[in-house]
Amino acid sequence: MYTKKLMEKIKNIIRGHSLFMLHYCTGCGAIELPPTMTSRFDMERLGIAPMATPRQADILLITGYLSAKTLRRVIYTYEQMQSPKWVVGFGSCTINGGIYYDSYSTINELDLYLPVDLYLAGCMPRPEAIINGFERLIEKIENGDADGWKHYKQNREWYKKNQKQALGDSLYTTR
Amino acid sequence: MILNIIFRGLILIFGAFLFQVALSGFSRKVVARIQKRYGPVFWQNFRDIFKFLFKETSISHGFIFDFGVLMAFGGTMATLIFLPYGSFEVIPGQTNFIVVIYLLAIGLLGMAMSAVGSANPNASIGISRALTQMLGYELPFLIVVLVMMYINKTSSIGGLVQSQIQNGWNLWSMPIGAGVSFVSVMGMLGKKPFDSPIAPAEIASGPLVEYSGKYLGILMLQHDFATVIEVGLFVNLFLGGGSNILIFAIKYIVVYILMVIISSFLPRFKVEESVKFFWKWGLSLAFLQAVISLGIYLI
Figure 1 (cartoon, rainbow over the protein chains, first blue to last red):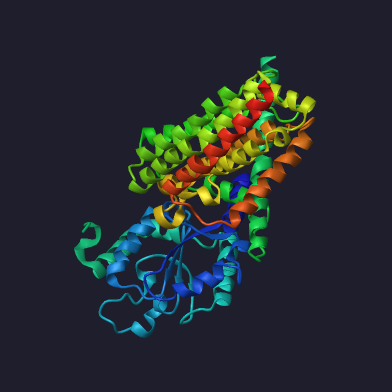
Figure 2: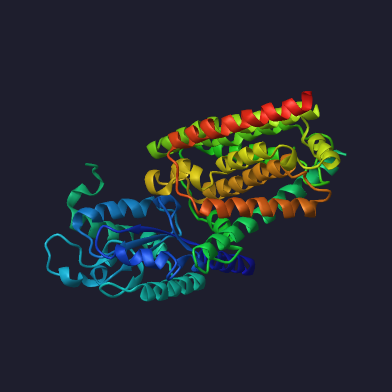
């Protein structure tokens, strides 16, 4: 029992310091990521690297507003990722809709559809805020608090109900 | 005797794992310093590999997919055994170059089989690029090595190392060939000008596109073992191996870091450009070296 706990702790420390990130930048805000990744702010020193495909990624970074059409793709992408996996909502629009709060075609609260582990508030958050946020995420993963993927698995019906409400019955039809 | 060989093989595989994974982590630091960044710690690659091995789930795409990964991993580990590392040989006397080249292809073929099993179009584009590029780099490299084998009248890598200890390094006796082989080894490793097979921005990391979790961890390990073989071949053939394993390791580190530094300055070739490069410059310079070396030898 004790060794299992210790093993889980070691795994969490390793996971926290090696995060491969898939950035889903259909909204705004992608412009803040290049200075965060390259020489000026150098995200790689924290062990965070960009990755090309959802299969290899650990973090799904959703930047800016999310329209109802892209929500379906985001859900597909999230379900292709391998657990443990974490979702980071980037910018105010993922929290409460931001300046698009009364738009007919955008999603206001991302947390209703996917389990968000970390929000980066701001419109847009500067690279300093992004680095600060990722340090919080690393801390949470090390302590084992970032368990949105478990939550998604346990409350699957609730999430699916919300997703269907936003997208209609076309959730799993390919077009 | 058998137990002795198995024991030495295990030591070799574990040592190669620790050495190369630490070195490729260190090379990330070197690239970061070139780009005026701080860079990750040198044990970052251990974290990456173990993170993937500790994933809770990993998707399989059928038997061929699984089998190809294991074939690539096993074939590469088996090739490690047939190389001399300074004075350290797993099976004494069994270090034939032809065997190494044959077994090295198993890794790439296993990966090709497995990537086709995933049925992803990006994976098949990446594999076709990798196999096309293989045509490019193997031809000049093999011409140089065949001339070297003809002159020294041996195809064993250990024998070539012995003759270099007597006659001086092949780097000095065939400098053009050494340059051609250096570029060919960069092509084998998929370093920067020749990384069109795994181009992340255009074909989403190519053959690796469908691998997740434990599969990706195993393939990262396989890539590190393949690096040990290919750079080790260059050190043995041109830099005279080493009288002990420490000198071998120092030469290896110098060659590998030099490749990393060169590749960090260069953009990417398209696949037809890289084959054209190898066949135009690599092949003609390899023939020039062959004519010069055979002329000196025969006269």
